[in-house]
Length: 207
Image (cartoon, rainbow, N blue to C red; front, side, top):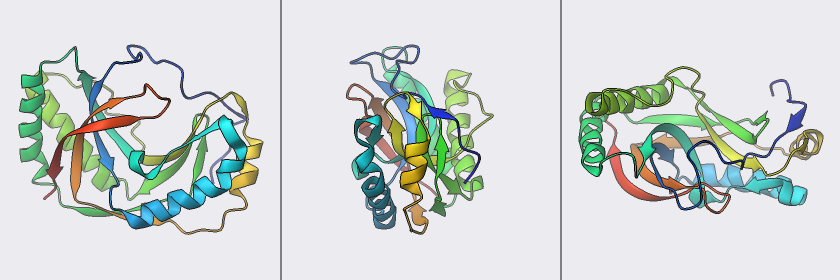
């Protein structure tokens, strides 16, 4: 595990532009049907559950690896979104399906994360999507730099010390999870319920 942050902060503050009811187009990798990922997530939820409302534990349905946003749905034409989708299909056809390992955990000031390794194929998917967005919109939101592929297991729901989380995680004896990534997902996401939830827009096969 890397150096622990001194304290946790509430992840659920309202970032610029976000509000209840607002929806956002974004690309994620999701983990439907990935039984080993769900096995590991359940083990983490079990040891973290006693910490109560200070953590938001993520159910299997909403596990995800954040990739690349496009824009709020009221700030981008759906025709542009469809064009981005078609451009991404062409780009992602050249990116082979791949295997990922998730874990062991890292405590971030706002979440408990499982880093995804190797990072290079995830980066290749993100680069392909960013190229598609650039081809249609002429510019890409979010920086290309600083991308750290990971799946969050829990979000901090309050400000407070790191120690209780670290202590709970020290009781966990598990192994990293394996995932097979064959698609990238374009979704419409919201955070109305203190959880990232979404409706699928399109699933694009790799390779």
